[in-house]
Length: 127
Image 1 (cartoon, rainbow, N blue to C red):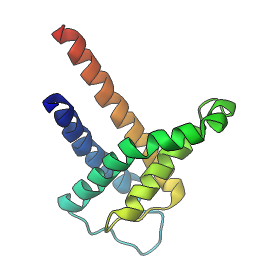
Image 2 (spheres, rainbow, N blue to C red; image 1 turned 120 degrees about the vertical axis):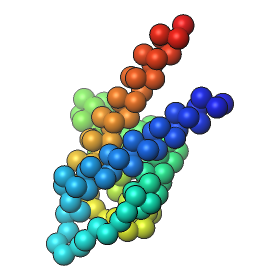
Image 3 (cartoon, rainbow, N blue to C red; image 1 turned 135 degrees about the vertical axis):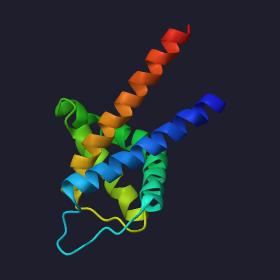
């Protein structure tokens, strides 16, 4: 149980860093909107994204499975963007267009993939 909590904390921190990076790279997509968030704002947004990603994403993937199969997996980018868009609508202080949310979803997917691959390698080395 303790190991799973540690993995969640690592994902939360790296998702917060990924959101910060995406906002710095892509911006919000809106004109005249300044993101005046500090570390606490991005940590909150990362926590909301981590929770939504772990609770809602499996449901949306199952619902959109036929479209994902027909599009050879490219629709999962839309699902990831939707998870980012929903979590940023809930989080205070950050708003982003849906297209920028899709790009942010790509960055966060890569971050989560790297975390998962690293944790699998570490568990294989421990055995």
